[in-house]
Amino acid sequence: MNTDDIWVSVEKLTKSYLALNLHEDIDYDKFYLYSIVTHSTAIEGSTLTEKDTQMLLDYGITAQGKPLLHHLMNKDLKTAYDYVIAMAKEKRPLTVDFLKKLNGLAMKSTGSEVSVMAGNFDSSKGDFRLCSVRAGIDGKSYIAYQKVPSRTEELCVALNERLKDFEKKSLRQQYEISFDAHLDLVTVHPWVDGNGRTSRLLMNFLQFYQGLVPINIRKEHKGEYIETIMKFQDTEDRKPFHLFMTTQLACFLKAEVQSTQNH
Image (cartoon, rainbow, N blue to C red; front, side):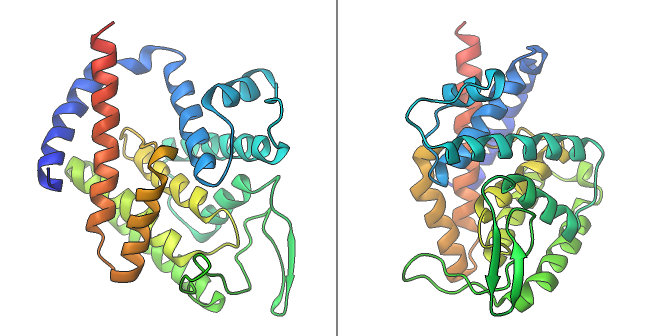
């Protein structure tokens, strides 16, 4: 099935999903957010399950035998998502400071001060990197750190422009704004750590902003997810990533509709 066919399916599934009024269930949004948090940190190496995350966030109970670092990652990311949801309701415009805030919230307990030749920065506060970073052992270097502030500013300006009159855009166009934001931010790679989490935060922020169903990239699809990002960074072809994200959305909507209808 190509991307066009999947979007036809997504539009139908979205109508069916919204008709279920799942958000009237007081716990539905909470547990879906816990799932998003769990899978986002799992992509970065966390071993916590959705049940572990629930026990941690609802009761303050840590999972036996699992690293404290993983618990801190999930707690911080949940705080970041709470902020994202609140800002989306206010229709907050995108700025460099806003993106720094997202990264700082996500990295609050696991980041640290970093000292390099160009100076000092704090990765727990969302400071931009002052050093070079690479994508994997044999990967390409990301853009020079000197270019990060201007490139991030350009990204914010472009996204604010695309968000104008978003209500008049098609469902596909609205989602693709968020997909492109994710791709572009992770490709700039403004921070020494937390770029993936922050890019997913930004993507979901734009989905909340536009009243869309937020997409949860599940850990079992990590390989394909990273592969489509790398393909874009090598070729500037956004289609594989768009197709991956659209497929993720379609699968989620279909599963939720079928599960609810079968009860």
